[in-house]
Length: 166
Image 1 (cartoon, rainbow, N blue to C red):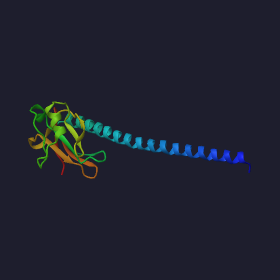
Image 2: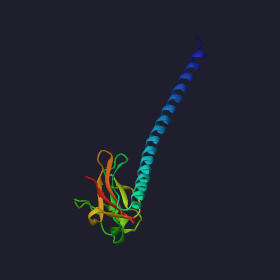
Image 3: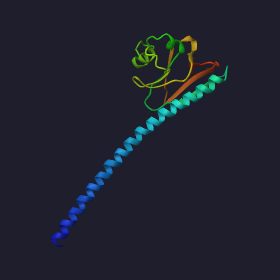
Image 4: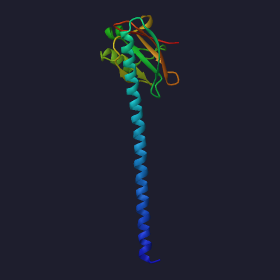
């Protein structure tokens, strides 16, 4: 083998290694971005399904439905805020007394959001129209069980009454 051929082969190997490395880097980034997009799509789909179902139930006065929703991965509960709490803002706390800071800020600031997806803090929020909580409560936080949210929805014409389905 001649000396020039050896140098050409080394150059070809180096170029091949660089090309393969770049393909791996760009491929990894593409897969990583795809995962993030899938999570965004899941949150949008969840919000759209909630809005659609609440609108349908609200219009059907007197109907009571047990509804199951698939919640995007990683959320531990979904909190609903009653119209009465939006009218007279106050702190929102869980059953142990822990303050939901972001939800409270939203209520006190009179931001038109009444449903919140909660991990450790509220991360996503939606407006589902007029809501009242069962038993005249001001808010209701329903735990997500194995990625599923179970609700009791009752159509009242002007609003939906929300409760937890046991």
